[in-house]
Image (cartoon, rainbow, N blue to C red; front, side, top):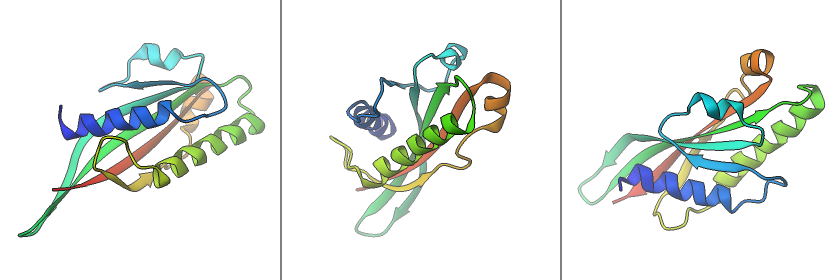
Amino acid sequence: MSRTVDIAAAVVSLLESTDFGEHVDVRRTWAPTSDMLEVQVPLLLVLPIGPVGVNASRNSAQEDYRIDVCLLKKLNRADNDELDDLSDWCETIVDLFRRARLSGVDAICTTVENQPIFSIEDIKERRMMKSVFSLTYRCHR
C-alpha cells in the first residue's frame, strides 16, 4: 500500500481505539457518498488526500502527507447546548492528534487544522454537523 494509505489506516485504528463516550462509526474512504450524510450515529470519515511536500538534503528526506478526518453527526435540536457539546468533541479530536503516535507507521503529526469548527450551511440546511480536520503527517526517509 502507499504511505498515504498506511497513515490513513493507522488514523482509523487510533480513532477506533478512542473512547468518545458514545458509539462512533469510523470508515476510511476516498470520497464520501450521499448515504454517509444520512447517518444516525456519529461518523468519522478518514480520507487519504496524499503527499503535500518533500524536503530533502544530501543525507535525508522528509515527506509530508495530508489526511482529512470528517466528523458527521445528525443534530437533534441544533441548539447551543448540542453544538457546545460537539465543539468539545472537536477539541478532543484535535488534542488526540496533537498527542498520539500512530501504531505501525513512522509518521508524526505536525499540523492539525479545524477551521471553521462547523459548517453553518449544513447545520441550517441539513441539521447535520460537519467538521473537517486536516492533518499533516511527516515521515523521515
